[in-house]
Image (cartoon, rainbow over all chains, first blue to last red; front, side):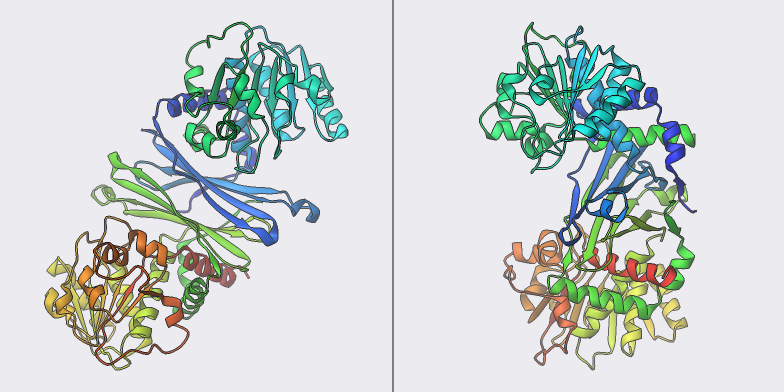
Length: 313
Length: 313
């Protein structure tokens, strides 16, 4: 039997915000509760072509499916008119091992599970009255994080900080079209927002810990490899509450691990983000909170399975 | 662009013996020469369903494609009338990261690369005049190892040793139909053949080292996980030449590693099998030789690429 191949149009239609937010929330809670299987990812490097490949697998315990996700990034592709990223998600039965479907999703599942995780965690950890949001970065995740958080709470002002003024202005234009009040901002001003989300591929901190205000919340979603770094160790030293999407993974290659190795916080100072989604977070007035999200394979599994259920019940 | 999906019929037609033997020989040599990239595999276990999933990737350095292979084994499937194994091989461009094709091969690529590797190595390491072959096991690999070795050299007699007499007789009938003289044999008699190939999922040795004759060659292809074991440590102690398809992998979960841990041989006593395919093997009269093959992802890559080139040039 030829495996079912689902294309990006069908997947995008199925991966509506309500479905994605519910699947990602449940998967983050399951992961925090130890009810997932997420083996260490497999990596391949292609130095001559400037490329890499990551294979991540994940299973929410007792779910009927698990997934294997293949994702490539070849960073010289744009010069040849090709997209940087390619990949697919393979949905496999956890009952029989049969290949249920191949989701030819153009990276949509990763993008939306990352957006949903960032928005859910930022919404859960920020003060209920926090209304100014700053985003660092001007790429797809910068746009999605803002759009998805705006689904969860009202946003008075959106500040966009990017290395390219032009890209920051373009993104602000897109936010304005959604009815959000957005403008480009320098790093210091952006870091002083009620809520800060960093979405860059930076290899050194994009903000200064001293610029974060008392009572603010910061979520980092960009650091997913050992050489990357968005949030400074000093921010973790100031934080009253630190949350990670996967303790070991964030220690290995997240901003949290970098802060632990710098001596800015203890390696047991973090709380699984999933636990913070179950009930309202108790945060002292003036506390700074930080979330380090490195991306968990169980979210791919949960979202891909939900999409497949919607498309081929 | 929807990925190209190739089915088992087309793949089987393309994976003709000449193509497979050439691709596997080249890949074993490249691997021995350090010209491959084979990251540690990714594993998932499904204890309640009695299943597991292995993801292996491989690249022959400078080849235009690499592969990611997903393989599942759910051992209670036959009771439900389903095949035990499922999987696919994804061929990815090593130039752009684009998904070139999905080979829905029903395990054929793994089966044929394993058969080709076993036959090539056995043929290269055995005495030129060795003509009696014993195979331990009665499954698909038992059949393939004999058939493929028979392509490389004449076989006077084939002895089949299996736990099931009935399966051993059925397999002998299939060999007879190919013009081979085959008969079931007890373990002691089978172990005394000129060439011995073990193809079982055994977890304890299937033969006694003392039954192997001076001048004989033994190839093990069944041990691919830490809990499996086909060849006894004492056989490695008797061997004048030990070959492995991947030093680290055979140390980790091959019969070679078990022999090293038992103190029967040194952990530096092995030679990469690929080096033995480049020129005739010099073996003293009466020497016993052993090959431990655990399966290398670079072979999947080489064979899948060759199949894709044949089908979609």
